Image 1 (tube, rainbow, N blue to C red):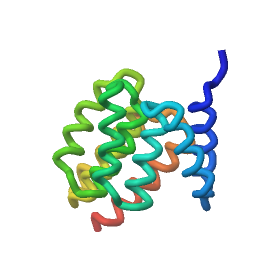
Image 2: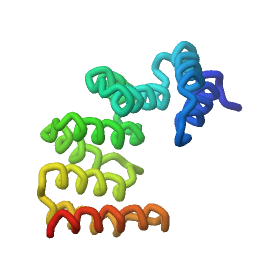
Image 3: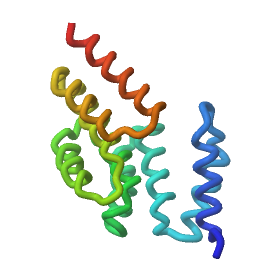
Image 4: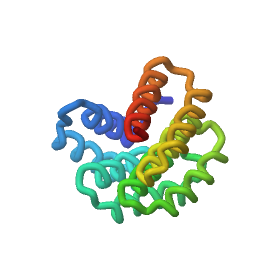
Length: 163
């Protein structure tokens, strides 16, 4: 059993999108191919939503992509990180909070990432003390030195706002 065409095109699109200066032509072409082979490809829909939220600030279309993924599989944990981040960017804090609460119940989800997002949401709200506490909680669930360094830098940034 190998990768199907939709998976191969998705991986090529993801690879093209992951560089500092993405090759958008390659990303779009391969993402379109992936979705033409499988219009319900959860990873491709998540990437598409992420791109629309981050690059175009088209949150409504991004949310449609994310909602479609969750309609297909509520346990597809990768979508939660991008969905919550986009909700925070759009300043839809109530929906972000609700989704965070639900996401914590998904088996296999990265709780460190969720606590970082929770801390980010609290920071946006100006609740720096609570944000710092959430980030410290994220460290408990962190099992990667690079990500631990990232969390420590986030804590430093939040502390600088408390002064």
